Amino acid sequence: MLSRTASSLYWLGRYIERADFIARLVEATVRLDTLSTRPAGEAAWVSALAVTDTEEAFAASGACPSQRTVARFLTTDASHPGSVVSCLDMARGNAKAVRTALTRDAWTAINRAWLLFERGRAVDHPADALALVEEVKHEARGFEGAVHRMLRNHTTWFVRLGQAVERSDNTARLLDVKYHILLPAGEPVGGVVDRDQWTTILHTVAAVTAYRWLYSDGLTPANVIDMLLTRVELPRSLAASTEEVVELLGLLSRRTAQHGGADQMARARAMRVARTRSGDVILSGLHEHLQAFIRENDQLHAAIGRQFRFG
Image 1 (tube, helix red, strand yellow):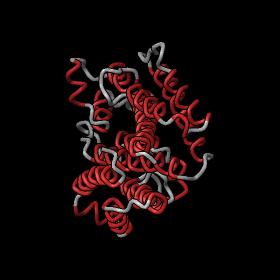
Image 2 (cartoon, helix red, strand yellow):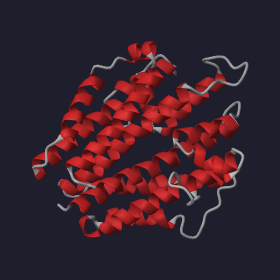
Image 3 (spheres, rainbow, N blue to C red):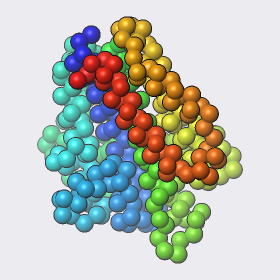
Image 4 (tube, rainbow, N blue to C red):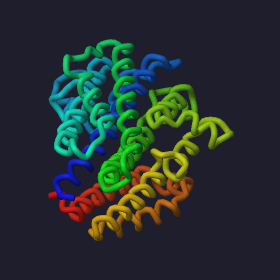
């Protein structure tokens, strides 16, 4: 496989995963802001910008953070790379470059998602934002299903590798930002607002039902952290994503005969994650742990590019 083809497939996976994640984050933040017992207001939308690392780009726009301005910025604003529409545009561009490697179902899902924004969509009201992100999620699920029905070869492995690397980054950033959001003055830890914010995380990673299956003692921050760090049963956990990266790199290395630093780095990371105990991480510093993971994930991404000569 040509290096540029491998690169397009890998980035296709990353951009589709990122678009789906941002859509889910917007959906969860709308619900936190409008449907909670005590609406979170500006703080919730500032945190959404922090998770997506778009604070500076938003500040440059001159707008004040609110449901209308941030939801529009993260969904339909094509002026920066951190919006759903920008991610889908990049995904479609990469998909066009490898069109013959994709099935009709996979291409159609990407194209339909992109067409959602082609004629412009208003997200000025919560119902508009929820309707749009639900359509994006639907097409992202359609793409993922199509990939899993394709031949299991280097084409699908590169797409899934991109998705797994992106998923790791998204989950780590989401958990890190929430853990460092200060509650409004007078709000107790474990109170209504705090519980709503942790529930928002579960909605963003589609894990509300999974949490109830895995933990029987109610919603607690420690359990949410444990699930997102260590539970391999949850596809969006750091443990599951790191395992998947190791598996996919092994398949690709055997098929392409291209072995290198990415394989070694991924295996070493997976071994450390498997030994991780959430209680120890909380005591020693969750923020530091997650920041180190994010940096290592960036290093792994660069190593993958070198190993497969993405350029």
